[in-house]
Length: 218
Image 1 (cartoon, one colour):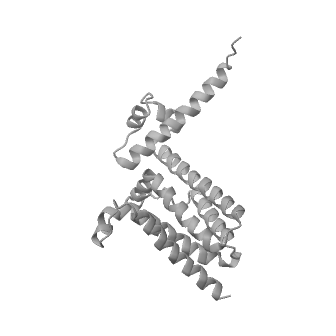
Image 2 (cartoon, rainbow, N blue to C red):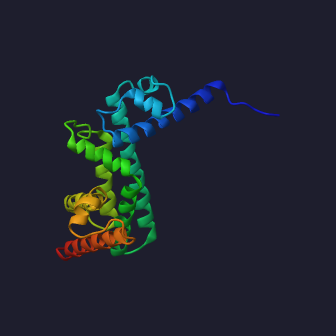
Image 3 (spheres, one colour):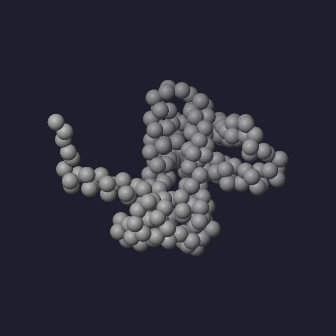
């Protein structure tokens, strides 16, 4: 005897899948072409849906673009939580945890080149989509809180942790964005088999030195 899902539930499941397909397509196109050069029709076609589908689900291109960025930041938050829980459960020393944090963030950025491109395009545009975006602000606060907790620091250290978090973002993003340009200018080879491992090692040492200096001030 076969059973069938209620029509309403099937339609709901299809709607969720279509929405995710549209977000995937929009993320690719916004990253590769840019916001101005991507139309809602392009997104619908890329997703394998009708040209009207993006407007039906998101209303406008600006709202679709915002939804893409919000989903990216939600992915960051999810990764932060997984990393925090794993670090706290490990029982390892802060020095070991630092290496894990650096490696995790490098790997996260490497696995999401479209996210890097999206943020780069925002930085080069006149748009201010990221300013005041609730999920973006919440993600930043959660990253600071997680790093403070993982390294066994106090709440009073949060301002300094925020500075180091910003440095971590810069030090992990830059090799992906400018490895083939300024990286080669200074003599690095992004295609070399140990390029990423060497970057992780270098950044880890910087963070450990910072952590040691932070402890010595207490």
